[in-house]
Length: 385
Image (cartoon, rainbow, N blue to C red; front, side):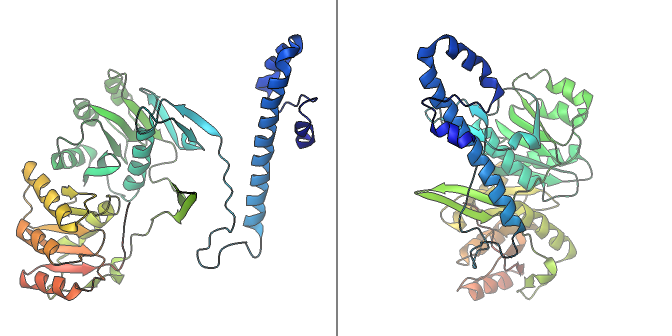
């Protein structure tokens, strides 16, 4: 009935939103405004019925004995998306780009204070949430432009902060800080001295809120459902359509990893490898991360050559005056040549973890053996573009 009425909107006024009652009454008093209003109301009808049809289609698809899925990907043959605008944004990545937020983002987060969220804030919050969800121990991560620039786990968040912040004391300016425990006053007092765009926590103590309350522009976000909130798929726009994939949730089981060098990793190196493996999967490719004692020491992200990512990570560690001796080097994808591994060994790394699978794996393994390094192949790649 709604659809039929909307099709005849030139002579029918159809209302699906009670917020439009006042406009309809005003238009009846001024008939010249009625044709334009009817077109707007008809559009609302089709948006509402379209969402209704989509909801039914998704439900029936979930109940089907043989879902209409692509046999290779397991994704639907027809992708139907319907999201209501949640928030108009001041602009997109840059001031000349229009932007808006759609969907249920605000169902997962509560903003306690601060300026309105920006397009870039929302991207960073999403990246921070997925990263911190990898950890069970008290952990703090600092991100900039969706890349982690300092991550650490410890017995308490204050210690984790000191370790994470020591990785890079410049990049966090204007960044995002996320923790997986209640933000207490002691940590809030330390963070308050630094210009930060967003702080995310499962909870904030009253004392912490009082400290942050003095910084009116600082955005404080509570993760309503706990950090590590899940999503089934990543969707990205491309020319002429969309790319859809399962979100990268796989970490892998260390029991399935393969030690490929003569020397076995020590127990401490294994723990360090798994900490670094959790971090590195959230760094833009090509990614190299140096870690030790559940702390990032140097992060190299987004370079065209993997050896350059390694050099940047080493340089960043040097700038922070962090010693790479005895560290583990982590690569989210294979070392295509031995040069990246050799650079890591020269910097002080004693162990490496990477997917493996290069045609030059033997050269890389030989380089590790010649330098007394332990190296593990995971068989899992973590490209992040």
